[in-house]
Amino acid sequence: MRKDPSAALLVVDVQNYYLDPGSSFHRYSERCWPGCMGYIGRRVEASVFPAVTRLRQAFSAVGWPTVYLRLCASAPDRSDLHRFFRTFNESAARQGYEGAYPLSGEAMADVPDEIAPRPGDVVLDKSTYSGFSNPRLEEALRGLGVSAVVMTGLATSQCVDTTARQASERGFTVVHVEDGQADYNQDEHDAALFASRGVCGGHVVESEFLAAAPLRLVRAYVESEER
Image (tube, rainbow, N blue to C red; front, side, top):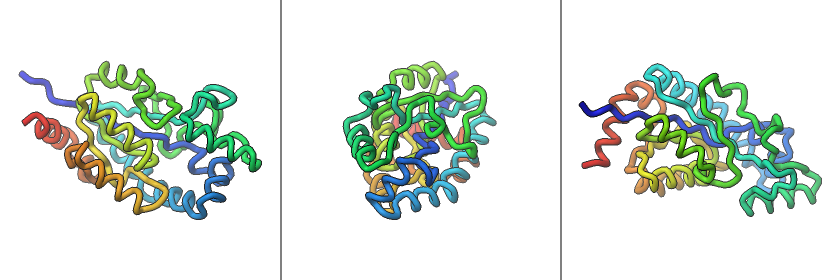
């Protein structure tokens, strides 16, 4: 008998430095693009936190894992960051905003308490856009027998989208959770999900819909790509 497919909930880069108004990243981003961090913070509070919480509960009930990705540096000089993140960090420092991108051991790199990892959850760090830049992500997903990745987190058009596309390249079915993601404005969020439809097979859903029947829906999504 064929084994039913399983899914992992991926929570991408929902970290304190994005959401804490006192962080260097938050303050410098607001200086460069006024209003962007206020928008993303409101969206996370109102939509992303509830969606992730809802899906974690639903996935846990059927024995499916949650995997957290964190964007942060391991090198004190941030030399391991993607060049765009490194340039942003250097520009922020010149303006007096030190450590815009936190080191992995700093509190600003942590996932907020509202959706903090639980015992047994997988937590992996990365220093660039794609979670698959850390080979441990694919190793973990394969080891858990995962067929599909369910995408949530920040930011829709950047690290979420890049990780989703890399997952598709590796043969995973990709499901985007519309209310579980946030970008720096609504237009970029909507455009990213629209552009990703060809990569994810059109699987763009609301968290309540998916949480109501995760086994049946993920099976349908996986099988639709095999026909």
